[in-house]
Amino acid sequence: MVNMRTAMDAAFWDLNISTPRALDGTARAIPGEPIPLDRSTASKALRIQQLSLLGNGFPLGIIPSYSPTSRKELGSFALQSLLFKAATSNWWLGFTGQFRPKKLVSDIKAELSSVDEWELPILKDIGKHFLEKSLYAFGHALSSLCTLRLSHSSSFGPRRLLYFLFTLMLPEHDVTLEAAWPELFLDHKGRYWEVPESVSLDCSSLVSEDGLRYRFGLHKNGGHPRAVDNITDEPPLSLMQGICGKAAVSYEKSKDFWRIKEKKEDIIIETDKGRIYRPSYDILLREPHAAVSGIIGGTLEAWLNNGSSSSSASRHRNPFGVDLFGSLCYTFQHGKFRESFGDLTRVDARLDVSSALALAKQVSKVFRKASSNNARDVLSSPRLELILQQQVAGPIVFRVDSKFSLNSPAGVQLEDFVCSLNYSLKLLKSGKVVAWYSPKRKEGMIELRLFEF
Image (cartoon, rainbow, N blue to C red):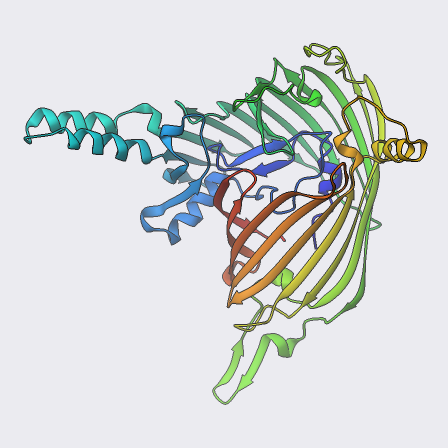
């Protein structure tokens, strides 16, 4: 089932988005913007943990990725690897490295083209190109009761120099303290922003049996947001400096129209040679069904700073806000994802309303035929997300995630699109290697996802 919790989590500052532009593989979604694509949300496993496992299936443990940089000569292609790891029962330590080969290859070619005779000084000059700092990025992570990550990048662009995470798991709640200097955010247009300081303290309840969930917390933005690329637009108001207290509550429910339950004879096959154990490639995709799920909730927030430091006098942040949100999803799955061919076809259609208040204002303008010079609220348009999955062969599944804006000035408009190939790892029950590409962001990377849709 599509993760409906993102409808609430998108209103806070801790929803991770996958990106190869950061060494740790994540950026934050920006509160007050449309809910991100389901495939865009980051893996639950830390990037350094992913590299540790993914390295076993790649030559020399090197994992490729693709993303543009602020320095065009560095190229978009990058290679990432886990250089060192150590672990005990209570803690683990990892050291990662990233390398962009385009500039190195170009510089060596230029060096060799001007060589008439091979001499020792020429070899020394070639060797200097390998030591150029702009080609490399490094990071390391230490985790026990809390996680601490440090990274260094000379010119790759966005980065977290220091990141701290502490999570306290209580019987009915999770308490999380996060801090980053700086923090990287990604807006709905695919643009990156750096906030010099970002600190969050959150308490989130576990989903109860009746579907009720709530969370509340404090967040602080420090310093002025900076556009990573050449962007002249004003930064999002929710990233401007200030302290925000926010609370949200939601009610989630799902219902099956029909479902074919997995049976013992589906898993254990009787043959002339004995019994054969044949589980599904992914236990989350083992039962054909049709279902509908939904979530509805509300948010309440208060700011101690209205963010009026923007150069535009018309842009200011309301010190107090109340809003409603909701999502509705229909799922149809054919096949048990157990056979080698034609055993999985799945469609998920999700309708998101990120702000009922913004939608109501827009509808009111339409009925009153009112015109306004103010910019259209990005949350005033409902979004329709379509997810199509088709088995290619064995554990390989092709997936397409697309999002449409239904009330934009241009009518129905394609807003985002991500395609991916998924290789399910049967031994992990619900683990998969995902290779995805986003044409909008011109980015692609390989991830490991565990017990995720």
